[in-house]
Image (cartoon, rainbow, N blue to C red; front, side):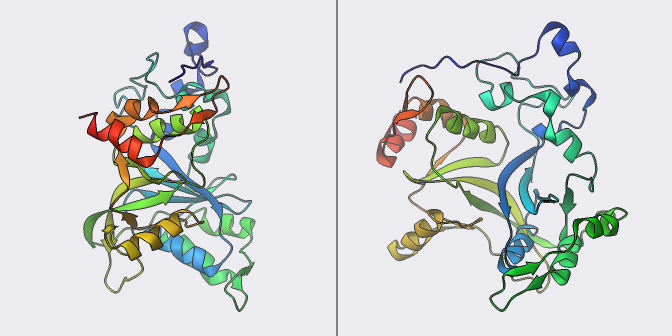
Length: 302
């Protein structure tokens, strides 16, 4: 594999480190919330899918004034020091470039997660989503024609506390978030290193052009709630073909994954990276087959 010389722009040391905005941010939201998807909901069906996501532990929804929805996995990075909210990988080569290059002085998280409702975005829980869905207007095809006004939502939600969650039956499962496109650059792969730092996250490679993040979670089943089902592996060729088609489309999330998928954890990542070749600018020049990856990362890596 061709080695790259990557310039770090976000590292802090000496006087720069002593004045870092991170020092007065004890909540460390950038290390406690993993972004899974960013998209715009354009139909009743897409809003109902979001409602289904709220049945899973650790999933949080945020809405921006521009109509963009963000899906987060709320879980502390395994390398976050609980004592001082520092990074235990700081200054080490295995720290993801995504973290090294992130600008603490332009941190979106610090302002966005300052409260449940801010001018920049708001947390959308079950009660808030029901409010939005009831006031949105739809055409005969279910497409959204009128979305509730942002200022009205701000006023309605500003004093709302997070609702108490009633006791529910739950079971261990997983959610699958397909990538919008396969990696084509060093930084695309590095992003997966960052994601795998969060406990409960796996990388699933279904095909060369079908990659996804797996989130280990619990599905909460309230009485009469049939909106979501537990994660499962597909087995029959017909079922696997249908699931693969979804992964190559625009599916927001899934609770199924082909049994042939290559599932990788953080401990597999260095062996995964060694299978790729890169140009001097970081573009991937050699993309191994799924069979080659399985052989190199899993079989020979044991």
